[in-house]
Length: 148
Image 1 (cartoon, rainbow, N blue to C red):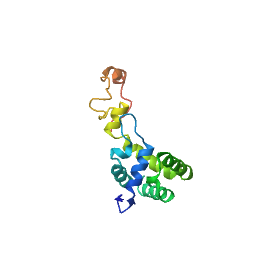
Image 2: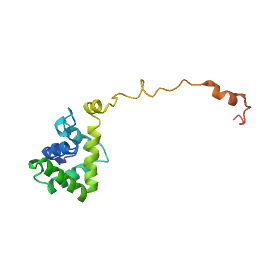
Image 3: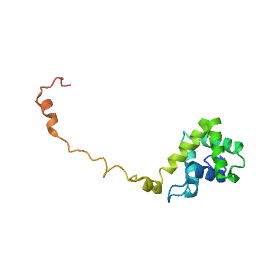
Image 4: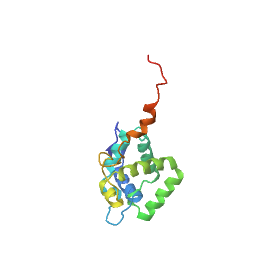
């Protein structure tokens, strides 16, 4: 069990298995649970207001609906996840959203999908140099305001 800010517990074994099924291995990239993302998911759930409380409730609901989830085969886990999604779409959405956020922040995932993991500035979003001539007409106009 892990503390998710303010004393909320999450079954890490279930979370790891759930992450592995939601975000499975792709070529040489491990499934999300095996990439060590569970702790980051738990931390993010405790830090962001939009997930606080919702994540732990969704996990509690998932575990109570699927108490033997970790021991199921992969196909059985997929069936359990699909059933949970159908019966609890908003809770499933919370689990999926937070999983995706953490997964797609990972540098290994960035490398796999060809995403550049750098800030947009100073190297990105190149702007064309400022063209002063665009102000020429305005500069030629007489002021249309009064001095205060």
